[in-house]
Image (cartoon, rainbow, N blue to C red; front, side, top):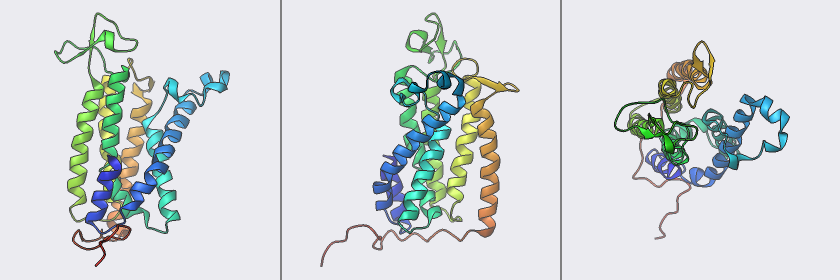
Length: 246
């Protein structure tokens, strides 16, 4: 679904749509590798004692921050191998990434992981549905919050993509938007499904703070030095897309 949305947005600005369909597999495996690698690094003592479990992704243990970096790097490598500019295509991909994230958090809900702190609200998840939860309590459905916010972020970025901008700025907005959301949602997971690292912040919150600063600096840099995004050319033939004969 993310690849199809990215291809549609790319078509609107006359960019090659086959990049997302062919390169999607690269980004998928790059994302899996990056997600697992960061999780292993964050829990290196456990895997140092049992290195045979490093590749056991079917037992769980993935980090979205690592997955995002791995997927983006894999996509960049694929795009460069095609001899294309990275930033215009990255902008088309940015609104689509939250779609994959939203569906991934549905998986978390079904798996009973990544839930929030206990709550008395009527929409709380029964503890019996939550791995490690107290059956007598209900917990914030942080996974559902994540999916809803991601869909809203998708809509906001799609709107921004259709507005005049400098190439690369939509991806910078995605990084900033995701990081702000993640910093806030982690407050509901502290001490339950998210480990506190330092100063009362979880590892994801620390990473999100760094990402917001980097994304802000990148957006300002692109505003000064990047060229304007291509004008919409949806009615014209798009390179890489089959055209009717005659």
